[in-house]
Image 1 (cartoon, rainbow, N blue to C red):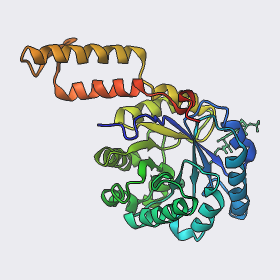
Image 2 (cartoon, protein in one colour; image 1 turned 90 degrees about the horizontal axis):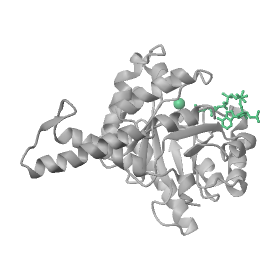
Image 3 (cartoon, rainbow, N blue to C red; image 1 turned 30 degrees about the horizontal axis):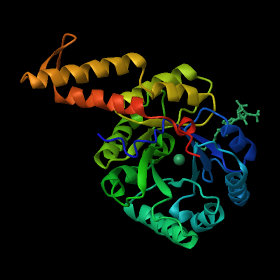
Length: 301
Ligand code: COA
Ligand code: MG
């Protein structure tokens, strides 16, 4: 797998209500890769317009020190979408998140609106990034079309709470009720060369539970996880960064693989187990992730 947009790891993506300038300002100082200023479900109906203004102000005034700045808009059929983009785009966010994406047409419409905004500002076409939240049964069924709807799309975000509501499942800590959908999202992301982000962990006081869920998500192939509280981002960053011993083992495996290939062996024994091409790919993936630097320390802004 090539890690899409590989110079930019997104391990932790922190949601905050778009009408809270305080939270946006605070998040700009935290250990977080991506800041998501929300206009959708984190904002009350009667605060939607205030939130647009607050996000526009934050984009103008807050020093985000290289952290990626995304805005989550309301769904296509909400009637809010165009006004939300108009109000926030001048602040030049890095991109937008579309919630409850159900089919490719949803993303194409948003793609056109973003293209018009880029034209109007004289920005390069495709500069504004796009992410799709997959959190309905129809979204899961249409992943094939959604994944290729627009080249602007950089990642899929799995939303477990909405999905559970949509299919009539009851959320549990084990999350088996959403396992099929969660796996479908990570598989589609790999198929279409997108990054995949796992669901939020709502109980933000339970950091052990968050760590266990994050480890499982990492093993499933997710590249990062959405967060709702600043307590969560250091845990998520740690889990989604390869550990030194993993990196060291991967380096040894890659070296041994090259030696074995040169000696004419495709499969061989490494630390007591059979190793062949798939394990080489897994090791290379760890090394790619280890070489990535979060945007804050890359000094991209
Ligand atoms: N982003 C930025 N700052 C946050 C934050 C977040 N997601 N969550 C909490 N903080 C800040 C708080 O403002 C507080 O700082 P302050 O006391 O200086 O104001 C500090 O971190 C500690 O917060 P705490 O008191 O533990 O939590 P809270 O009661 O203020 O907030 C929530 C709890 C759940 C309301 C809050 O975490 C939140 O808004 N989360 C995101 C909700 C959201 O966006 N949902 C939609 C997507 S799922
Ligand atoms: Mg949702």
